[in-house]
Length: 486
Image (tube, rainbow, N blue to C red; front, side, top):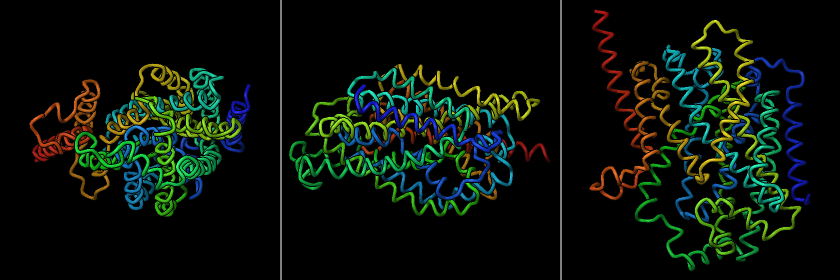
């Protein structure tokens, strides 16, 4: 066993230890297991949300897209900053309502606002369906990181199995507490490793960041600007809009809002989190640095850019540190996804169809569902070859369909009815499913439209369909109710 693999396994054991120890002195009922008893302060909420947001996508996908796509990559920085600005007003309102109504999941919010357990079931199913590709993203990244960083001494398949077993175990034992404590180690490591790589590699190979971009522009003219077609300005703007609206619609991110001890936590985080976006710049610098140093990585192979350049540059012990940081970027969000998906299915699906189930039974079922969801995700992980960013964008298109019904529910006079919310979400999700399965774009649907419209992110089409159907059905059902009352 080489030194890199020893270091990676040491951090795996450390995360497992922290994850299990986190439950010490706590009664792991569903509220403690899922949302930490609503007792997390600013630091823990920051680390927890950063742990969910900065994942293998940050580590591999960001550098892979910089390597493969160039300028379109910068959409990743844009949408996070906009989402954090919105969170200053949005998250305190969600937390306050959840606190007053004792909510524990994203679906609980919709059930309470629209007085519809059936809508809660739909929201839960959409959330779980969206979380599966997000978890697959983490597992694919985990396999790539451990296999590459160990110099091929352990296969991606074995690495994924080991990681899933470890995460499943500490999630069942400690729930969100385990994820929070592991996030502490993960965030420190990712910050140090990524910033170092983003500064060192451009200077080591090019003599600086500006010379690096000059060399890339000379070798690949136009690579550092948005193309006129495809991932053009209209694609960039529509993708930023879609992902900004969907940012807090991920069930595990939404659920973590409830873990705070007061609403001031989110206003403090809203001031800090945009600075954390700067970490992504250093990830991009690594991807750009790899373009001329590790050429000919195509398709999903582009996700290997960071690791291949690191292996080429550093001694095995430091590659092991890089691999360990990458491992934690998969395990922390993976643990939150497993916990959230199992809670949704147990509390908002099973409980809705079996109202007589006790809280103890629901809590036990949620924990037993963790390995089931892990196995389902493993199946999809070993099928297909989508790149990491593609998987994330597909999930975003799904969860963003929850945003219209959610944001209108915050209004004092919400015109959206439960039927309208339900129909809108169905219309949006059905559109996403059709687009994903058929590989349709706006250009193929409407080839005569101007190029700027053809280049729009197809997720916008689903969102428009959602809003139109939601509005029409809400107006019709409101009118029907008024007529019946008369």
